[in-house]
Length: 198
Image: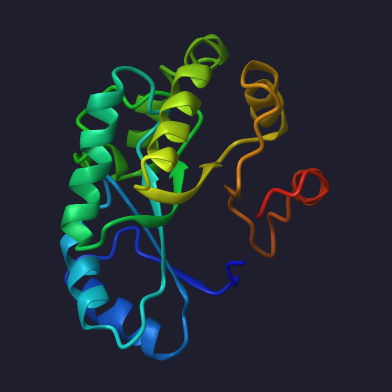
């Protein structure tokens, strides 16, 4: 059972190590980072110095379809930078392909820059790649590189298609954006009914 208090590290650079250290000292038990965040080493430095090890929630860029050995190498490289043997949770970061260098942060510089890249991932692309991507995620878990696998930024139709193509697969978690003005009540209710951590 993973508690719900965490720190996201997207766009943290020079202050990243200090922020993660302070968060863990304050009782934060989840540290969220990603393949293209550009700060894995800094997060790793903070984790190595931490008095207790938080759950590391790691996001792989896009749907990890394609050659398993390449996907495994990407995850192993992230774990090496973090200085850990396995992640607590590994999520597909968005329901589309990453057709650029997954450690390149340029597409994240602005929302418009990311949208330009994300627009190449259509529903057809999702449907054609989700089974291969999920199969790779399952293999990563079976090999012990991660404890749990899930998704990020998936909506109900993505979760339905995942289940349809992958023998009823249910992600451990689906990380979505929720704040005071964007509650996503229906999606949250749907995920909770399926025992998907939000």
